Amino acid sequence: MRGKSSLRGLPVISLSRALTIRLTLLGFALFAAVIAAVLAFTFITEDPGALRNDVTSEIIRQGVRQTAADGLRVEKTPTLIKIESASPRLWYLVSDGRSVVEYAPELRPSLPIDVRLDGPTIAAQMRVGGGGDNGLAFDIIEMEGSRVIVATGGGRPGWDLILAYFLRAIAIPALVISFIFGVIIASAIAMSVSYITARLRSAAEAAASIDPRAPRGLLPTQETPVELMPLTTALNSALDQIASNMDVQRRFMNNVAHELRTPLAVMRTKIDTVSDGVVRTALATDVNRLTTIVSSMLQLARLHSTDLPFEPVQLNSVARDVLVDLAPLILQNAIDVALEEEGDDTRTIMANEATVRAAVANLIDNALRHAQAKSSIIVRVIDGVVLEVADDGIGIAATQRSEVTEAFNRMSPRSTGAGLGLTIVRDIMTAHRGTLTVLATRGGGTTVRLLFSEGE
Image (cartoon, rainbow, N blue to C red; front, side):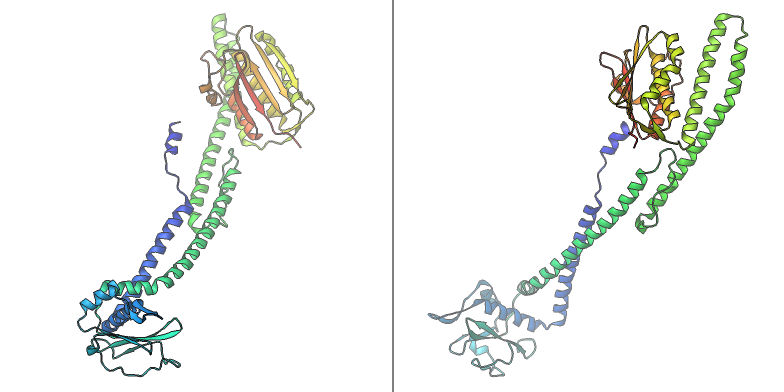
């Protein structure tokens, strides 16, 4: 139980979530790197004077207003005022062909070309004279159906305004690229997680189908991704090692049990010649217990070492036959045993009849061993697929019921059994893909229920 509680405290790692976080962070890093690269390339390749003129022209254009009542004017925005105060050689000219707005005309050089505003334009944007104070920016913009010339030079905007200008200029392309990149990332995540999940699900299904009696390495490796191959290979190797160790233990149990059968038979014969009745009875009790242990070990070894042939079996018929076989033992213990059959008694199950008989016999024998004086035992078969053995003894505490099927676990120190009876029944039910459940009998006592799969 301590191990289970520690597992609950471990963090649950989601593969898709981890990939999403990592790829999202990568996307942000690439986006920032692209922006930084564009800005660095621009600042390195562009002339500083041309950059300042471009930024100044953009800020002037933002302040251009044209109305029928006031005509053409340039609004003094905070950024334009800031540039004017920081640029002693700044000049600019704004004209729509009918009116002109000019700042510091005494600083403006003669314009090198003549642009007709009532005809086709040669260019919408021109840079003349290179950088420095002699350079100028010459732009033509469309405003309310008319063309407006904006020419400027000598501006010295701060680097904060230059950076903001370029960020605005590349904002929309960057957003579009980011959206496309995000879609690609999302698609890649979905495809990757789907592929990995499918491979993991296939491995999980293969692991679930492994027979616990022979857990050989059967996890698929043909379609396993390279990243998961070390895990699959390690699990297969571990399963092979576990199966090998189990085979060694089974062979050891089988050999020991076989080797002990003959000495025990000889001991039983010699005990009969002992003249002291008390000593003879004590020795016979110990030998009988050893014989029971050896027989149970042989049953377990045979159950695990061979594939059981299945056939249609009537559980009702098996219960009747076992009770007939155990009649002498029942009479010897002076216990009332009754058989109750409920529902359909003709239904069959797909089972190995010999092991089912052994399971039923072990349950009844276990109940007889733990029965008290004047006790009663009920063997109940329900619909041909459920068998219950119920007694009215002292019962088993709810906290101990999960331990009764453990090997060599005798619930009572006075028990003469080997502590393997319910272990054998549990393994028989596992081989039949059935269930064994320990319940409390109404009114006191213990009920052991076996549930089989119905035969076709």
